Structure formats: C-alpha cells, structure tokens
Image (cartoon, rainbow, N blue to C red; front, top):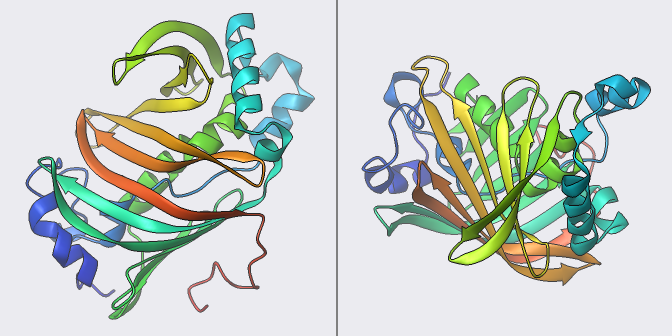
Length: 290
C-alpha cells in the first residue's frame, strides 16, 4: 500500500499538528492523509429520507423514535424553515468553494474544493486544482486518489467520515432522528455566539448524543454538537458544527458557511460558492476508476 503523503497533507501538517489531538489525526505509522484533516472541515454529505433502520421502525411502531410534543413542534418548524418537502426529498448535492484548516486561530492551509454527494452514502470530493486530491466513498468502501496513485482510506478515516456524516445537518434531520430507539426532547434555551437559541436534545439507543441549536427567530439550525469515544483511549471528543449564511437555492435554505470545532477549538471552515441540488452523475462516478 502506498504510504506517501499528499501535497495538501504536507502543506497542512506543520500548522495542524500543533493544535489537534494526535490520537485523532495521524494515521498508520504517523503518516497524515488528506481525509484526516478534511473530515473535520467540510460537511461531507447529506442523507436520504429513508434507510433500513427507519423502514424497520415504520413497520414496528414500538421501535420508532420517541419525540416529546415540544421537540416535535420545533423539528416541524425547522423542516419547514429549511424548505419542507424540497429539503426532505432532494437526492444529491453538488458544491464548490474554499476550504480552510485552522491551527491556533491561524490559517494552516486553504484550497478550493468540488464536492458531489449521492444519498445515502456516496461522495466524491476533490481538493485543489494543480495537484488535486480526491476522496471517494461508497458505503463501507473508501479510497484516496492523488498524484502518487490510489490507496484505500484507513479504517480510522472511514470511521470518522461516517461519524461526521451521521451528524451532518441534512443527515441528522432526515435520517438520525428517525432511527429506532432515539429519544428526542426539548432542551430549553441556550446561547450561540451570544444569540439565544432553542435546543433539541437527541439521545440514541446506542449511547450517542447530539444537541441541535435552532435560531429563535428563524428556527434554522445554527449549531450541532455531538461526541464520540475513542475506542483505544476511551476518551471522549466533543464536536461542534456551526452553520450560517443561509441562502435560498432551488427552494432549499442552504448554509454557505460551516465552521467546525474539536474540543472547543476551531479547526476548519468551509465557504460554499455554489450549490446545486439533484444533479445526475455519470455511471461509476463514485468508483476510483472514474
């Protein structure tokens, strides 16, 4: 297996490694790969309105997610604010823009990106133009392609991709809250950047937890908090994705700015320049040979 670092990785490594927890980012034998940086920076994908777990819950009402009346009201208002049926049923998202890695409140690396996502679990992300790096995911299969050739993403990269995808804005509201055994409750009022927000608490059957913060004025999501336990160290990592600069695109309210935090420290930002929904991709687009 190729174990060379990519152009983007080398350009980010010095700045990023000063501040990010080493157990989260370096992979096998200490090498750094593009995916270990970008999974914290970019909202990789969105989900579809259904998947096997949600279908099984629909067949067995006793296993459906339990939602308090107040929380259900908040979720309904949020879905409508995001576009209603248009938000719930779009099938793909294509976006371009700029992506930043941040270390000690300073930019450690930046580049352009092109992203294509097909639900529920396919994505193709290309970062950079002169020496591009492409990350491809199709379910449990994952590859990285750069000027040195093709390699499979390591298990840690795939795990982190699935984590960030599960709690992305679109997946959380279209998939995760429908999972069997999920408990959803009103979490009261809190503040995001000194602005009051209503909170929805989401507790999963397997122990996962998330907090969804909604603007009190628009009911649009402004932040999602979630946590994950490292299997080796048993330590918990706290993540926050902050959404802003919503624009109406094809009837869907779309956040054009996403900031990512790890254990309270800003580690990346994504600025979308363009977003297009429901584009059709050519056959094999989510295969490494394309």
